[in-house]
Length: 87
Image 1 (cartoon, rainbow, N blue to C red):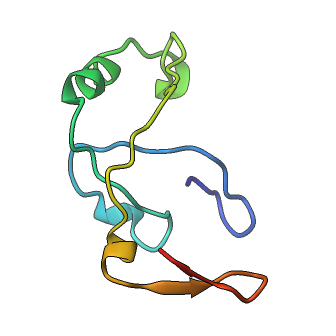
Image 2: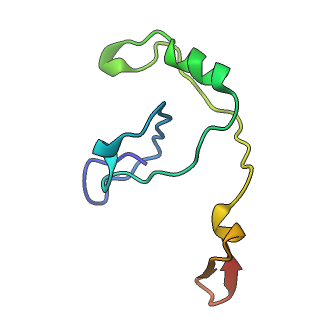
Protein backbone atom coordinates (compact mmCIF):
# COMPACT_ATOMS: atom_id res chain seq x y z
CA UNK A 1 0.00 0.00 0.00
CA UNK A 2 1.32 3.42 -0.87
CA UNK A 3 0.79 6.49 1.27
CA UNK A 4 1.93 10.09 1.68
CA UNK A 5 1.38 10.23 5.44
CA UNK A 6 -1.37 9.54 7.97
CA UNK A 7 -4.78 8.63 6.50
CA UNK A 8 -3.53 8.62 2.89
CA UNK A 9 -3.26 4.88 2.06
CA UNK A 10 -3.99 4.02 -1.55
CA UNK A 11 -4.17 0.73 -3.45
CA UNK A 12 -0.82 0.94 -5.15
CA UNK A 13 1.30 -2.18 -5.05
CA UNK A 14 5.01 -2.60 -5.58
CA UNK A 15 6.57 -5.78 -6.95
CA UNK A 16 10.30 -5.56 -6.38
CA UNK A 17 13.22 -7.75 -7.40
CA UNK A 18 15.01 -7.31 -4.08
CA UNK A 19 14.47 -6.04 -0.54
CA UNK A 20 13.69 -2.31 -0.22
CA UNK A 21 14.69 -1.38 3.36
CA UNK A 22 13.93 2.31 2.77
CA UNK A 23 10.23 1.33 2.64
CA UNK A 24 10.30 -0.25 6.13
CA UNK A 25 7.92 1.28 8.69
CA UNK A 26 6.22 3.30 5.93
CA UNK A 27 4.52 0.74 3.68
CA UNK A 28 2.76 -2.60 4.21
CA UNK A 29 4.80 -5.42 2.73
CA UNK A 30 3.43 -8.87 2.03
CA UNK A 31 3.72 -11.72 -0.40
CA UNK A 32 6.39 -13.18 -2.57
CA UNK A 33 6.56 -13.98 -6.27
CA UNK A 34 7.07 -17.72 -6.73
CA UNK A 35 6.28 -18.02 -10.43
CA UNK A 36 5.56 -15.98 -13.54
CA UNK A 37 8.91 -14.22 -13.60
CA UNK A 38 8.62 -13.81 -17.37
CA UNK A 39 5.55 -11.60 -16.82
CA UNK A 40 7.40 -9.54 -14.23
CA UNK A 41 10.29 -9.12 -16.67
CA UNK A 42 7.88 -7.85 -19.37
CA UNK A 43 6.40 -5.36 -16.91
CA UNK A 44 9.89 -4.20 -15.92
CA UNK A 45 10.82 -3.57 -19.57
CA UNK A 46 7.61 -1.72 -20.50
CA UNK A 47 8.00 1.82 -21.84
CA UNK A 48 7.42 4.56 -19.28
CA UNK A 49 6.46 8.20 -19.54
CA UNK A 50 6.09 11.09 -17.07
CA UNK A 51 6.69 10.20 -13.42
CA UNK A 52 8.03 6.81 -14.56
CA UNK A 53 4.49 5.52 -15.21
CA UNK A 54 3.88 2.89 -17.91
CA UNK A 55 2.81 4.38 -21.27
CA UNK A 56 0.37 1.47 -21.68
CA UNK A 57 -1.57 0.68 -18.49
CA UNK A 58 -0.59 -2.60 -16.83
CA UNK A 59 -3.48 -4.42 -15.20
CA UNK A 60 -3.24 -7.56 -13.09
CA UNK A 61 -6.33 -9.61 -13.90
CA UNK A 62 -5.67 -12.42 -11.46
CA UNK A 63 -3.48 -13.55 -8.61
CA UNK A 64 -3.04 -17.03 -7.20
CA UNK A 65 -2.44 -17.31 -3.47
CA UNK A 66 -0.58 -20.54 -2.75
CA UNK A 67 -0.63 -20.54 1.02
CA UNK A 68 -1.38 -18.67 4.19
CA UNK A 69 1.66 -18.88 6.48
CA UNK A 70 -0.29 -17.43 9.42
CA UNK A 71 -2.88 -20.20 9.21
CA UNK A 72 -0.08 -22.76 8.89
CA UNK A 73 1.38 -21.41 12.15
CA UNK A 74 -2.01 -21.60 13.87
CA UNK A 75 -2.33 -17.83 14.40
CA UNK A 76 -5.89 -16.90 15.39
CA UNK A 77 -7.53 -13.47 15.03
CA UNK A 78 -10.83 -12.31 16.51
CA UNK A 79 -13.37 -11.05 14.00
CA UNK A 80 -15.39 -7.86 14.73
CA UNK A 81 -18.35 -10.02 15.80
CA UNK A 82 -16.14 -11.84 18.32
CA UNK A 83 -15.85 -15.15 16.51
CA UNK A 84 -12.36 -16.59 16.02
CA UNK A 85 -10.88 -17.00 12.58
CA UNK A 86 -7.61 -18.67 11.67
CA UNK A 87 -5.23 -16.75 9.43
